[in-house]
Image (cartoon, each protein chain N blue to C red):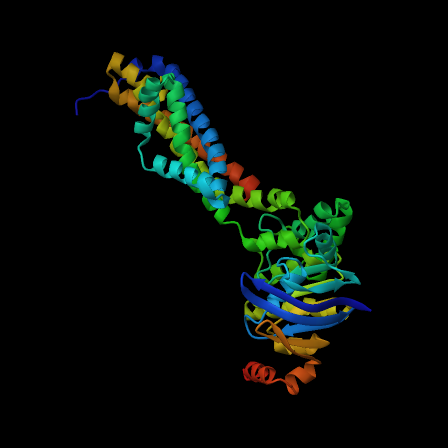
Length: 224
Length: 245
């Protein structure tokens, strides 16, 4: 091992990389929010819907779950322009990740609906709750509590998946690390730092999510 | 004064009849115990009374008012007068014991929170849980949870309390504390319909016992009559099997 670590050559780029981390955070946030919202609706349709609507949703979910994310984004970025839909690389990645996440989040949230306990619903009904009151006071708090840990995990996974954007030339964290590497060839230093940035992103997110879950939803468990 | 009249009440799960032509009149302050083998329709009877299952025939008259279970207004009125406690406690897991008791009066009846909270604390003290108001259901034993469930039912100031095998899910050593709570209510003159497998307890608190089998009422009478001189063969058979151990 005759390699000498030289972080000095890389330090000028630390802010540049931090900017990349910010873009990664945005992508993960967008993919999660849209994926979660679509997933919530699709989970409700999967559990309570019937007929063609339900089959369409199930078909979509199964198709997305069984194809690679990279292929999905390639399709959006390279194939859609053939039918006149032209998207920038950032948009293509954001949409691809959101659609991909929506399928996973559908299945996760379905489990939430399934875990609703018939007994609590009976109790809600017999003490005179209206449908809206039952959803507000019984169903939602239960679902949020049950789903908080898996949803948190999914968000962390999405944070790391954003690195796929580098392939499409989006200058997020991995993309920027790749650029600096091409200029300085300090691969060991650069990719170590990039990895560290990801660790910071996910560590901060895990910790924040843990405290939110712990204090607001009485989720029991440990961060690490 | 007559509190509850059940007349030729029938119910079904799909095509399977589970209650057939059940008749029962309950006077105010009376305690009627419903016994019978599993699947005899005891719990179903209670579920129909609180509107969790629509009857297919027959009528229920509560405090002189004939109930239309398809009408929202009637359902609300019935649930104002009749409260139920379930075998599995059915507490809201995301709420403290106190919140479980206060939620219906505040949210459904829109009463002042301060007043409701004071009442709820009194009720929880009455069932022996003054020090558990801030505990969540998963921090309580089965017996404690069931007592919270009883307090929750009482918070609505019901005229009739339905108890659906409230000790069946409990460890044996926890049964006593729940039965004591029910004895207390009995002494206060609460009208109750008690589905139970605790035959000793039934004999002790019930004014009358209703024996059911296959969704029908087989025999009604004083506890002494049902347990010691049952008339119907099915009752004799059931009682002899129960009392043997």
